[in-house]
Length: 115
Length: 109
Image 1: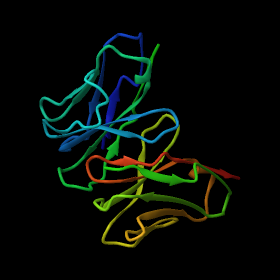
Image 2: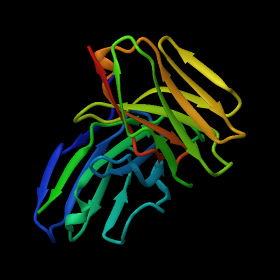
Image 3: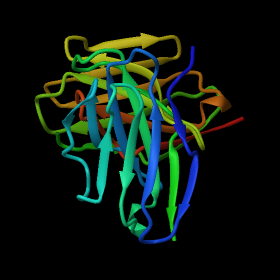
Image 4: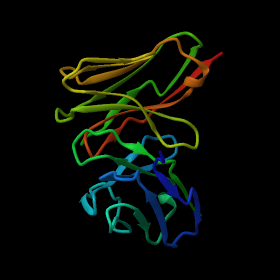
């Protein structure tokens, strides 16, 4: 079956521009996660949804970052007024239920470069 | 959740040899410890995981051991093959998963 998909795969933005990154989770998956992965580092947790509810946004680095999942399926991560330090790969993952310690299935990521 | 320390950062082995990667953590709340393999340009893919009520788990050439008292867990790959070359990440936690910094494994043919 189809895995997690993300679009665009690559995005170049000028400093100060707003960007929107899309995640399509595996169909039927209740939980959705966003991570930021800097070059040569492990993924860092940003935020987590269970259905449409954003249950944890403790990892969002600033109020320029905003995520939504209005219908409990597709999610969008929005970054306003992008800065060079926002350059990273943004990974989305989903898991079947809302339970703790479930396997998370990752998408291929969106590579964001802010010039 | 707190971070995970992962060692080594790079590991080079000869085809057929074993590879071991170790991770340590400091909090006691975590009950789930997955390992991911990431190839260039791709997202992390789960290769094996272990939960806190189990000390060891094996899947063909891959095994993971967990010592909750000492707060460390390890990945063991036996009979390594060139296609095992990738970056491996340990992780811990529940929904707010915390990852190690990664180990770049190179298997030389």
